[in-house]
Amino acid sequence: MARDLRLLPKAHLHLHLEGAMRPGTLADLAAEAGVAPPPVRGYASFTEFGLQYRAASALIATEEHLRRVVREVVDDAADDGAVWVEPHFYPPRYAGQLGSAEEVLEIVIDEGERAAAARGIGCGWIVSALRDAEVTQAVDLAALAAKYAGSGVVAFGLASDEARFPPEPFAEAFGIARDAGLICAPHAGELAGPESVRGALDALGARRICHGVRAVEDPALVERLAAEEVVLDVCPTSNVMLGVVGSVEQHPLAALLDAGVRCSLNGDDPLLFGPGLLAEYELARDGMGLSDEQLAQLARSSLVGSGAPCELVAEAVEHVEEWLTRPA
Ligand code: ADE
Ligand code: ZN
Image (tube, rainbow, N blue to C red; front, side, top):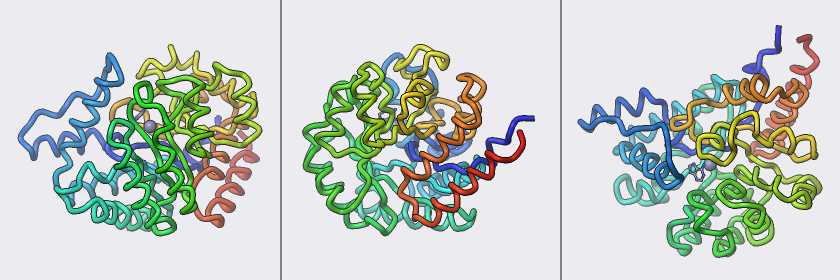
């Protein structure tokens, strides 16, 4: 009998709030709006994926919708054995409609805290700017994130189309986040190659990188990531669905681990890609052949790389060791 991966304590560090919405909730919100649910499978390009992401997000029309999605995302993380969940969130998506960006952020912080407390886990937020929005908006968002550092926000991110929008113009925003003590966790090395990962490290001061998997194209960069203990928040199914890698079997996760790079395992957008957190761990075991020691290492890195309080991390890491010493 294999060890139960649900019982492996872990953190979910790379998921986007709307992209982690339950399919049933999307159907309910569409019914309430009197429209057909938008399609959530099969993308010919990142642009097409982005349009579907936005169509799903547009169905969140009220504060109660937003609270429901937060609550369910936290519940799903807890159900999959996460002791900490750290979703990406872009407050301007609802600004105007549900209040100011700050009021919207307060709603998700409040609901995340309540939902996590009800399940005995923790929740912290990554305020994420979008590369295809104005750079000045990213600066404003970094200032907002900084205001809530230590009060619900733990990190600052950068999402959307990396191929068309390199990291360097966002240096000022990330400087503000860094000065506030936030973890800098931009997307890089997904839709662009090693130069984008270097840009995230050098211009943005990234300590965690969302994806980062295309660093494998440059062995010197892989060595640097290992030496500097940067955590890559890896999402295998997302990479396959968006054509970043050819198949799960060809995914570079095992190679990155063998090279000593710290990686966490994540779902990215389970609504649009399918598997949730636990299913990604199962896929890593069954589809990539990772050992329980490697799976425990992913869980350890997710905890140590997270913005969770030190006591939560220390206790959970101890439980990872206990999980590993149980007979398989
Ligand atoms: N936003 C949601 N999912 C994303 C991804 N995989 N890459 C960049 N931005 C995203
Ligand atoms: Zn992502």
